[in-house]
Length: 416
Ligand code: ZN
Image 1 (tube, helix red, strand yellow):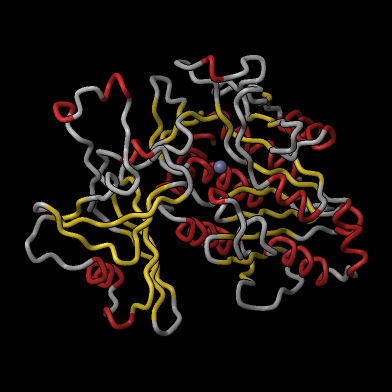
Image 2 (cartoon, rainbow, N blue to C red):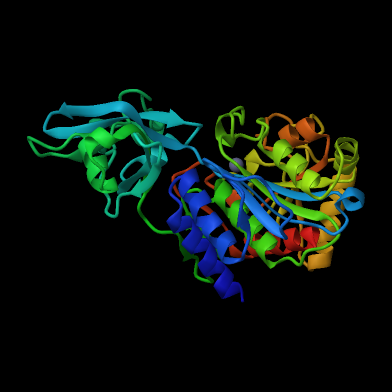
């Protein structure tokens, strides 16, 4: 069973170099399970459905008594920090054809060096159609300066100029095709048909189980595609019940969530309102329903790093493979309240999995998640939780197999 789950995690990670690829992968799974696609049609009272909007997705299973039992929502984000290709990317320098990139979010820049990189994204065509693409092979590389030319690098640390030092080289031919020509070949479109390109780099190294005891998963985008896997697979496996079960996956968390499809946008609120309306719940009934609802916001947490224990509050630092972390911050960087924490703890005990707590050091500000944003927008009691991981925002991160499976079981127990 857990072997199957691990395979399904790896397959999702390898299929999803961008948020839109992730949404395409997950909606295919939902369609297989007879969820109805309401992305381009009015919602009807079917048993289950989904709305996909660019790199974001809301999926649900209708409850039998939603007005009384509310919505049970699991939220996560689909985007990860990285390097996006700029609109006029082509350059030629000292024998290399290069691409210009823009930094998205806050990646660990060094982690993008000396990797075999692919390019993935989508094009918008004249017809308005959108076509996804990804390079099959590795096509680009950002090379680090040799130690002989940067003698103090191991003492002083690596310093990268964000504008000058991150351009990948992607060929050396004298008359190489432009980026646009290459994308046209990848998408089997003509240059004239392509109106806009949205592309980013990704590490072509597949996700893998690592460790002498096979207890870790290493991959790009674990933050936060690991939580997306746990959320959607929990929804697919859960039985429908009294409450309406909802999974909301948002793009643009890494850049503040303020966008049409981000957690600060109207996507979830509008979806819930429509789901309630087709269940015959009035506007006032809907507002009442929100007060009976709850939300688990799942986003990875910092596991205690074996080489840097001083960076953690060791009484409140999650240890890898000892269970998902409940994230607390009394300054409301996390949405967890006493009651929502109790709700998650009871879901963990129902699922028979362990949990841990995360509170950051007082002299080290913690990150934030979509939790406080959805809680603020909808007034729903929300808990922030997440799988402990290392190398957060690296091009290749690592988390524990047991933690991820435990999170999935806890989310399923909560939805049920
Ligand atoms: Zn995250």
